[in-house]
Length: 408
Image 1: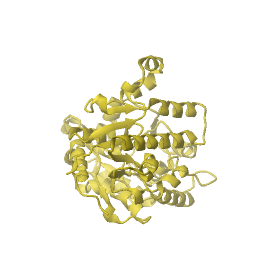
Image 2: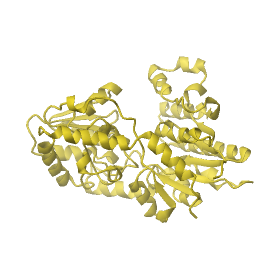
Image 3: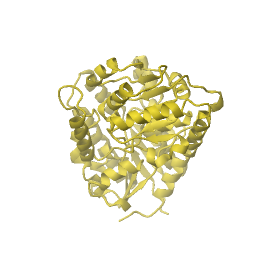
Image 4: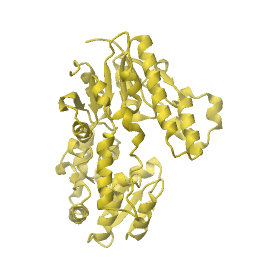
């Protein structure tokens, strides 16, 4: 196996830094290029940050990765933040930041003659550049193919309009198209976290053998499932209140379903699309929580009968694994990671995308099933399933994949 190290690059706290950590564990990490990393931001600037940003910055830290292998370009994210404060809706700062990091990845790989592993927003300049050596180019495609995403979102807007006009997902970013639409053609290896994400690339021409699915992982929390009891039929939704997450479908199904009188839906969402606000206000027995602490969210997972997120599309859907790790059965659509994780025996239930009537029936059936005295057994199976998808397993599978010859 070639021991050429990798230049790894991405902005944010993508995948809890598991990719650079995996390479660091086997001495294959040349450098990790990122944005605002805790120790890269000067202390004088950290001291001036609002408490909310200080708390977020504290999560930008991975002690398992040697500090000398991390280079944080904090100014890139600072410019993005200032753009948001200026209410610039053009997304130009995001496009600039993606390109800036991609160029930094290119320059590092050229100088040190390293391989490259990066995510699709930051790959175009690095993958299409000329090199004196022959770097292995590994693409982690965590978003869906943009053309596929836009078509699906537009189709849902026509069938289920919220408000007077069709609306588009906040996560649909047309400016990415030119840099992403054919990016897979320039990669030696392609990795996706879910079979659904892979299928969106295959639908646009990628040969299926070019891509390997490596599902994400979770750190299993410690608690006794048998001591947790949910009250009545309590359903939980956690996520942005945007079209892609399917909250409008859930609210329609919840309002139509014939459920026990003490049933309750808790919606945890900091951001809710204006088109969904009216649906939230009209739906019965719904509590909206604009924000919760980590401990509060853990308690909601543990005491809810069911977690529901009927997404139109998800690159993965990490929140499903979070819910399962707390012993909470989940209900979603096939356009997520759920088909890769398990079956109904382990607390994973599916409903067709955008089918409100089918979702209504599912809620009614699960209200009966999950409030029985023997439901604890299903919660235990859900935790057992989540335990199989550890972050350690993810890192091990990733490293093994990188050791294999590239698919041509």
